[in-house]
Image 1 (tube, rainbow, N blue to C red):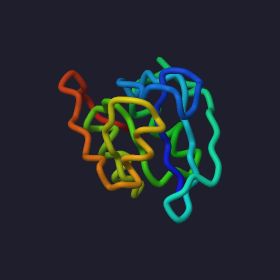
Image 2: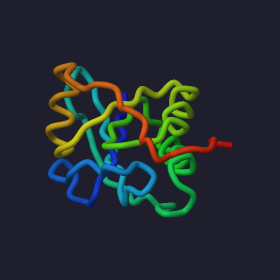
Image 3: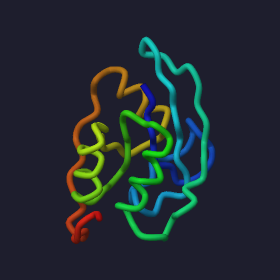
Image 4: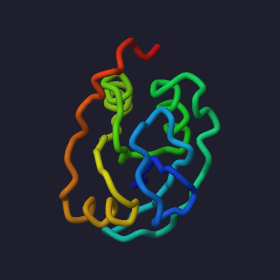
Length: 121
């Protein structure tokens, strides 16, 4: 499985989760096997500020993720991930703590950001 995590900076496990999905600067891609990190890498979100969450969904899906951890996300972006079979989780804190809680089954769903409307096309 591959987890895509939205980051505020490029410090990987030590980065804070970006609270606004469509505006995150980096993605942290974590390959997991048997509840252990097998590999990870930080990649820039090349379309930041370039169309919002729905466009960011497409960008992150290019990395073959199966799960997403973000601080906040509009309902349309969440629906687009659901259509792609990707589970979405919410978290506030560091990427390391988010992954630890993911392994423990402690992550919950993500409420839609109230200010986001429109539809993903």
